[in-house]
Length: 167
Length: 450
Ligand SMILES: Cc1cc2nc3c(=O)[nH]c(=O)nc-3n(C[C@H](O)[C@H](O)[C@H](O)COP(=O)(O)O)c2cc1C
Ligand code: SF4
Ligand code: FES
Image (tube, rainbow over all chains, first blue to last red; front, side, top):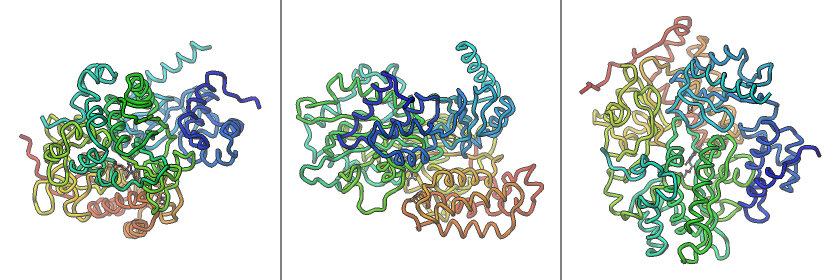
């Protein structure tokens, strides 16, 4: 198997499993999948799910049925930065439609798509618990709130710079 | 200024750290509970306080605790529900983000009272940074002897574990949460058995909301009776309200439940009035699941009495003319908002979040979304309104868990109070694509700026 946690990730995995009683290690499945997704490029190829199943000593199907249930798991490759823009009622009445349209225009992609350079993916999501700071989106592990067109431009620029700096 | 029991110290610089929290009087309630009180007397104080569950259903916390089964040799668990995914609700996030030690102190006292040696915080996966704040606070609390083995020499062991979910509103429902915590899909269980008898890993389990468990701290500090003197009737203590939508000051507010809805919306201490000088059109006062109310029924009840921000007053009139306190997610819609579109986004939300186990919920939520979409796009027919009504009625009460009801109620209330707006969409197909129904359906209500 080629996909494997490195030492640091394995230490984190063991810490996660230690939260549950002996024999109840399946409880660590969601946290373990979160870790796997973070570790293996932002999505969960079948290989990653099988790897998690082997580590937790459960059947691969038990992992698949969970991975397909929860909205945070990406079952297809995504860009380096995923813009998950909230579109539920409170955000909608606070102007999320305009922000979504603006992001689509600036990145020239539709919801669900990734830019050709592989940097950005746009996803429309449901309430993220930031309704008072709307419009908003989640990017990786952080929330970007009170979005305006200018702010969107600045955020896109910020991530482009980050990628440029890494190359 | 109203009484503040939870957020009093939220603005103290550094309150997120153990040292500052402790210096400000933190962990005194835990010390009192563990050293001076018996388990029975802690439960008794919570009962006397009248504290009702802050997660949405409002079930008395002390009573829930007294139901927990205590079979010999079987571990029991307390699970803190931090899934917070009901649209309009973001109060638990605020509490955990700014006052993590308040929650941990509440969890410690509650774990002691329930005999939970391993307590779990199930936090929605998207709140990754909040989970980190909690993890850091747990490390600090452990270092200082508040968690771990033989706490304060009492012989009581307690560890708190943070468990991150992965995106699913349904996991806020307590039995789905338990399934998820066991590493499964979030499919709600059929009750009975109730979690208090067979919950996490089939062991007796209590699931409580973040705010409920944090409120245990002031209750122990001041005593249940004193706590119960705050508020009114069966709405005791304080409540966190997350206010959002078209208001000047969206945010999280702690209220004592004697304030009127009008004052809450218009006073500068709270929402600061409707944004951009617009008029109030409607409000969903307790999270997306509760009935929407038009402005006239929001500020006053059908009997013409002032409506207050508490459990009883918000539900005055039942579903015909009232709503619910719910989770405290307070959503304000101004005159420019379209009720059809708002209802559509909520219908889409519930369709997306249905776990799919029961056909009325799985199919019905999809149908409601499709019909609303059709009306919103100017393709509605007059029979669609009755069809929507019929579908929501057939979902309500016919499902395993209350998500079905939660999906039905917003649609029912929107039709009940804004039927004319739906009809307008259907009768003015082209116009509805370029303009808005606005405030045509009621005379401007009563608020006169001071
Ligand atoms: C669909 C659905 C979603 C729910 N989401 C939450 C939630 O995010 N947080 C919460 O505390 N309770 C939520 N609840 C209520 C819980 O089932 C449960 O009643 C609550 O956690 C009990 O805690 P309390 O008595 O302290 O309020 C939800 C219920 C349903 C039916
Ligand atoms: S009511 Fe809906 S969410 Fe609840 S169990 Fe049935 S299908 Fe699942
Ligand atoms: S509706 Fe967008 S964060 Fe809640």
